[in-house]
Amino acid sequence: DVKVTQSSRYLVKRTGEKVFLECVQDMDHENMFWYRQDPGLGLRLIYFSYDVKMKEKGDIPEGYSVSREKKERFSLILESASTNQTSMYLCASSLAQPPYEQYFGPGTRLTVT
Amino acid sequence: AQSVTQLGSHVSVSEGALVLLRCNYSSSVPPYLFWYVQYPNQGLQLLLKYTTGATLVKGINGFEAEFKKSETSFHLTKPSAHMSDAAEYFCAVSVPTWNNRLAFGKGNQVVVIP
Image (cartoon, rainbow over all chains, first blue to last red; front, top):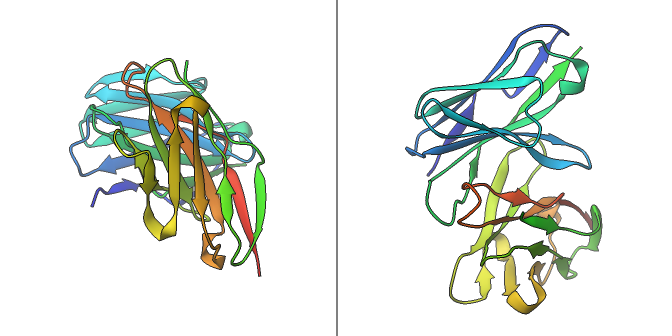
């Protein structure tokens, strides 16, 4: 079974803090993704990575950065957390070949106060 | 660009009744199609997928979906709803020319009424 794990299920941070969300997959997938999920807005892609040290902006990259130093690990960084970044964050991974099926982690529910 | 439409953010269904969730997509090339399910406070789990071949696809938990190219649709059905089907359901599409990404619909929250 593909396993995608995320470092925390629940996280509470203060405005202005630097926040790190970690994601690890164990299936040697080339692609990794970070989404945020908000009620009524569905899933929105923040960033994705198709190889080590490679990254590409998704639909809502503002206020976020990412790091991929090893193939199995993809980190999402909130440089200065704000209350409008309170959300559910989902990590996913996939092979770089069709059909590009994505496997998801359990999610991190982040609250910024 | 690819897009996915799921109508009706909330869907109520009686226990034992048919579950029908509609999904329409737009794509200029043949797509790969997926349905995912998300239970409360969990990640997304693959229900079923269409890649090539038979257009009626069977998935887990008694769900199935039919790819209809002429209607650009991939509707999800289950003949008899169970209380455990209460969850959020997402339709998604990928195409080879779109950077390995998936486009997701906004989801349907399914409520099962006893």
